[in-house]
Length: 259
Image (tube, rainbow, N blue to C red; front, top):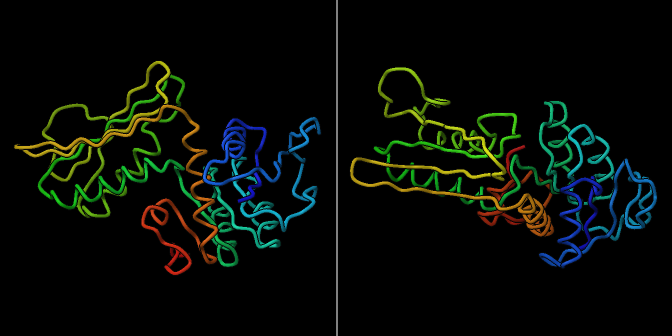
């Protein structure tokens, strides 16, 4: 599986390259693309127009910037290459570009490229559905340099739980006076030290408690998830896929995410 890494010189691009060099998921590095390339790295070119053999590339992994999505999808569609979009922060117009590309090629797009987080979300949904009487709290912990709170991943978890709990409401950082409601999902943020990322979902009744925890030890886990997604796309028909597609085993014989 030959991989083109867009955003090759960035931290995540380098992490993907390391995994390709190690043969993770059968991946090899075909070429890197980065606008900041100065030609000193023979494995990296400055733009897609400098790529000599597009036909040798099995998948694009994008860890660049959301504003680049137009040029990425245009080149990917023109060359019929499956694409993993691992960047975040896309505008509505940029999301439309992703959806349009998915009409022609397999595209994988997720707000979090961690396979472990995807599994955590799936388990949280199943637990919330199986225990409708239970109360649910989410605790997320990150390093002291993280600006946003709560984390986008914590909100993803809460949104997923709300799919099976239609009356659920989200309470960010409980304070003041008054009892919690049965429908309430509390989200609490901790910021300290060098914590890479911990997400904990607590589901409890008066008689029992289930705690689901995912702890990130390194941001390299997102590179692992991106290559797992690339491997998955090699068997997919054109369409838009995400982490739910991957863990449920959807492929070319199944439906993609609704466009």
